[in-house]
Amino acid sequence: MRFEIVTIFPDFFAGIFENGILRRALAEGLVTVGVHDLRAFTHDRHRTVDDRPFGGGEGMVLKPEPLAEALASLGIQPKAERLGGGEFPEEPTSWAKARADIKGLNVGAEAPTCQPRTRVILLSAQGRRFTQAIARELATVDRVVLLCGRYEGVDERINQLYCDLELSIGDYVLSGGELAAAVVVDATMRLIPGVLGNEASSEFESFGVADAEIATAEDGVPRSQHGAGGLLDYPHYTRPAEFGGLRVPETLLNGDHAGIRRWRREQQLRKTLANRPDLLEGAALSSEDEKLLEAIRNETSSDGTELQNHSADA
Image 1: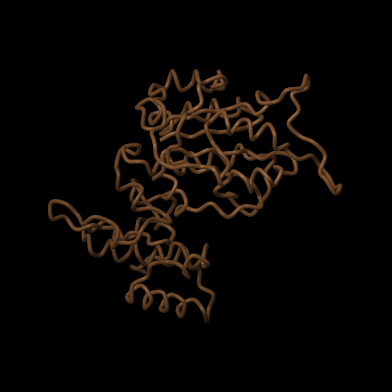
Image 2: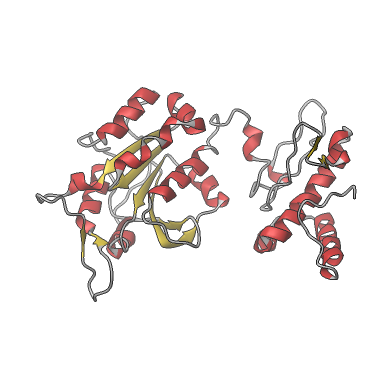
């Protein structure tokens, strides 16, 4: 999979790609990244990328011409003319070459002559909220192009002409889209097969898929987890069994996989009800989940009992 990032601060990304899972994915050729300096697509001595907004107001707006040229250099046509299919030209598969691309900004590289399955995304506080479901969708395409907004934003005609999605990573305002681009790259690339050491890691976590979409256990060993089905994850514990006067719930220590699974599902429901009740509306809940959720609500409605970290053993 290929990520293209268009930004006025290309050096922002160098350190991010040198650590953790993303570095390994780059080294193994599972993911490649191109970072493109928007100022390389200007034609004046000041390398101007912004101008005053029509209608007045505070701040500056990123001009459409440099962004359109940057997209054209990547073989991106306007949406009305864009064609599907084809292969993306061969890209670097080693971390050393990927890092060299970042430093060199890939400027002057030959533009692709045909379109892979590509999504062009404008990162903006005005966008649709980025979710795990969107990350899963992006992980199935060949190439994601991320346009990093700055100042007051991007000329809306770029959004109208080129962008498939306008995304925000949360209900707050950043100084630019670079941090948001890093979030989208990280959340998406870890869902690509082979990137994580254990493929199940991306199934049994917050916002994960429902049980029906997860393969059954192997070797006859029952699973001790539920698929999140859109809920938050359950609490996690490790050694020592007692810390700071608090002991790990006994259910997790007795080896009863079915009991552990039930406990973890209850904790998922408690965590979600306490921290993100809005997720419950779209979650994949069974009839048993609904009954348990109702019991939790009844348990806490009269006395305001804390919902988080409540043990089923208590």
